[in-house]
Length: 202
Image (cartoon, rainbow, N blue to C red):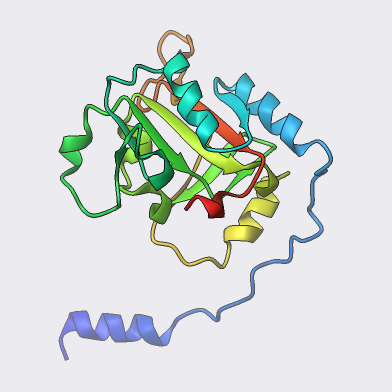
């Protein structure tokens, strides 16, 4: 047995016992005004929230905010009439460098910090939410949770390869202590808060 095999065998025999995740069910936030808090927090950190009743409203709102002649990519088949559909099949990430707007959906949103939780099965390509100039995310209003404690309860035992909490446009204040939006990612983030169920579209 080589030294490497001995070390790996020793590590395998000395694994710590698995323990249950701590019970944080008592750490619940106030869900009464979760939507209002989410809107306030996201707006404060530079994002924008638009309430919608269906996906058709997005089609009418986009021309007011974005240049539809620029490259727009979505993972949502319902919006393929106004955007290039990304199905998640592997493509060279370098071909995505000119995306003006990405439109994807999120599993849920968090009121206390304005974040949305997105896993790779909703991203299409992992780089899509980060390489674009502008990011738009659709999330059901009913899927809001008040706090990050409740968010971690939802994802703690989930199975996914890659996931990310995203909150607002990218920003930095490192340069002369001046806040700069869109420093290393999307320059803007719009949340379309859907008063309905996304499942009927997907």
